[in-house]
Image (cartoon, rainbow, N blue to C red; front, top):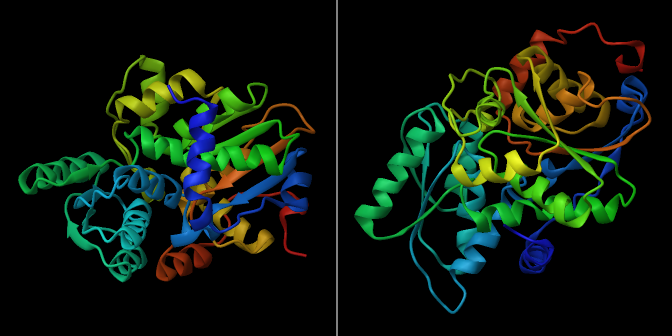
Length: 329
């Protein structure tokens, strides 16, 4: 398994291409939850999501020594954009398999970065299977969005930054879908700061990782959630291995809570996040962190939400009866 030096090496490889995402304190969310809540705004990262960490780390390793293989990947959008963006400085041909119902803003971003887009299926396993077929047929390299140790290593750099930026942090909360981010975060914390707890939050309608951990092996579940980046019917073997061994706690949130958290982060913190990017905060607001007064870092994973979808969420308004501390001032 990855060790502390692996994550430090990944930090050095990707340091020059990242934008700073310094944690932001939220008085409102702290007052509401009784904890000291900080948000790591990866929605402000290059391409609008944390995914650039794993993608660039993977391509850096792949192209070490001058190799320039063609690549193909599969993604609902954020990993696709990250791979397309990362491929540019290496001069690599990139193809990405995206869902037939992909968010238009994510399609536009991938096209802008110069990758060829192939639409196929609606779920992660369908996309990945098709991408592997293309890679085999065309003798190019398939890059999995989660089931790849170089990608996991890159994603774990997010936790390494948090541990430096908030040296007295007690809990780090992240969403889990396919598990690449949570695998990297939980493993990095385990090897660098074992006293810090990690909490994985999933939509109730897409709980493949939690169900797999309960079963002791990856299992397939039905998926229905607004959080398109977390629609995973079955986690990969590698992220499951890391998450099942390293994550301390799991929590599931409803669709209404996800929507509300998306709107509240925009309203109260002025952070535009997509529903997948608001899932970790949804867990914190819904009571995922026990006790009181704990210093909590919440990873806002991405901000690539379609404006029409955002308009619909705003028109629907908040669904929960939040306390006074959550109301507009």
